[in-house]
Image (cartoon, rainbow, N blue to C red; front, side, top):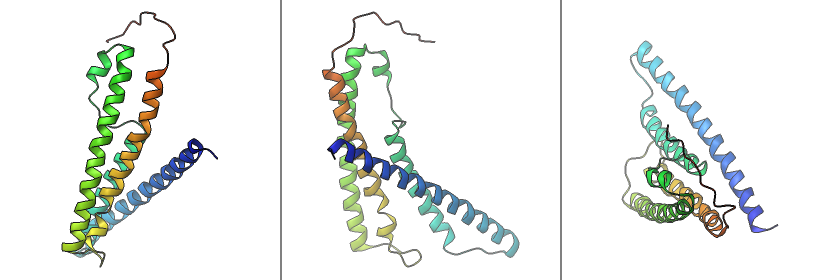
Length: 176
């Protein structure tokens, strides 16, 4: 198998794994939150560990959601310059943005690894006897996956840059 096929298989596995994990975590959050509401309403109490777990589940869903948004190219972007630029300049803009994004998220990955290492050494309180550094592993994991997704867009940008334009027709834009 060639590298491109292996990369596609890995991305497909990653996609299915993250999508399944997000669905399971969402169901767990809904069930746990409803259970907490019911217990607080009808028995004047609740599950002691439910609120911290819900906070971590929200964190994990948010970070994995960012991975999905990056993978699907639906992340937040300010694209005024790219929108107004001519087609031959857009290719350069996309390349610069993807390289810059890769560098930024690589830095965030490194910083989050240091954060988790410090958390492991100096530790915070644990939830359900699971050390806090394990709950925080989502940071380097998510930022690492986002880095990979941005990095994988760069060859496509370079390919588009090297591609010859089909024709030099004037393209009308609809600004409404």
